[in-house]
Every structure is written in structure tokens, then in C-alpha cells.
Image (cartoon, rainbow, N blue to C red; front, side, top):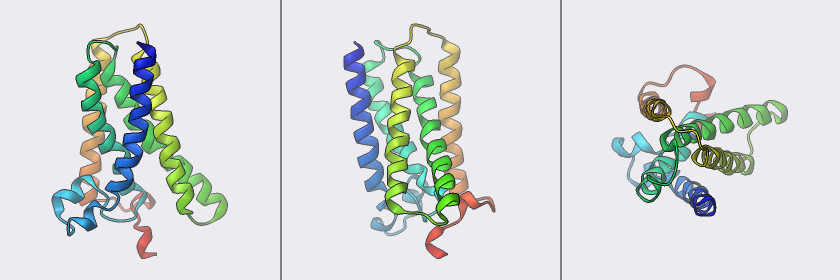
Length: 171
């Protein structure tokens, strides 16, 4: 079982990174459609790029759940933590290295996405193989997933005046 689950989580890393990478261009490819911008980055802010990890993770989570729902524990909680780890890793990594270097480097930005996704999937794996099971973890996981998705959408249309939301393409 652990081998099968680990294979799913590695497949998730590949899916999230590849689909997230392609999603980077969706908004432009689809003629700046508002509905596409809800799920794909509409500018070059750090915040908008967090969608590249969240939405592919959610899509893969739904696929994975179909196949693994009866074989794992705390599925929603594990995926909720993964959905938090990717953006937190990207944000911390980005602001740490840019504070040291003074500007951003595309290769490092991409690597932060890959490393954040890998870490997220490994943490998810550890939770899914744990023996502890609680319906409260599932409720908490569902709340985290829904809230993060809500804020990703909300702040696309109403971004706070904070550095996280600065469009780096206009600087």
C-alpha cells in the first residue's frame, strides 16, 4: 500500500508541476477571459503564481481521491496541508532569496515551485499513511482547502496593497 501511495504522490508532483507550468499561460492564451483569470495567473505577482500550485493540486486530489479514498487516512487533511505548503514555501523562498540577491531569478522561482510541490506531496504522503484517523481532520482539511481557494479568487479581483500582490512585470 505504501508503495502504491508513494507512486501516486510522485505522479502528483509531476502533474502539479507540469500542469501548473502550462497554466502560467492560460490567461493570455484564452484572451484574458475573466473566468480563466479566476484560476490562472492574471499578472506576474507572487500571489497570482500561487494558483499554479493550488488548482493543479486540487484537480489531482480529486483524481487521486477516486482511486484511494478507501485506502488512506485523513485524505482531506493531508491534501489541505499540501495546499498550504506549496504557497508558503514559494513565498518564504522568494522573499528570502530576493532579499539576499536584490532581484528575482526565473530559474529560482521555478525551482521553488518544484521544491515546494515535492515537499507538499511528501508531507501529504506521511499524513495519508498515518494510523490516526479523525473525521475532525477531514473537516479541518475541507475548511482549509475551501478558504485558500476562496482567497486565491478573491484577491485576484481585490488585491490588498501589499508586496505579495505587486505585479513584477510592470516594475
